[in-house]
Length: 199
Image (cartoon, rainbow, N blue to C red; front, side, top):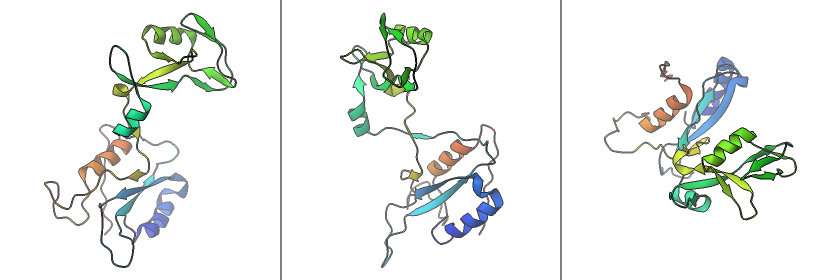
């Protein structure tokens, strides 16, 4: 919905679907730029996301990490060249000491080791730990196993091009990337998608 009617329709949708079922407003950047005289260019629209009761289908969508993010956070693994992020291996709350590389390590105060001893031994055999100079273990989160950065409620990467093969000349046409993201997040395999038009 655009800026003309979005705030009005939101009130009606709260009545129809229940205000308590409102999950998100997603701000979608439709254009790269728009020359609107005597005001800020209108380049966004809103997508209102409602769930059907407390339990509803939702799958987190991801975008690839950018090069700067990767270069700042990831380390190259010796021997394989794979990139990994040293992820903390503790959770909130106290817990017992565990063995790492044959040495009994006490978790930091107010923390606990994130896995059982059996799982720690298995991960150790698989080479999934990175140790700091002082011997603190971190879990190796490999870049090639990571789906990417979870998408937030500001979508800047699914613009409608002003020309090109995808453009059909329909005023309110949406790009395929936008539709794929919405359906992927909210519709199970074999589910039903309804496209209602309220014009």
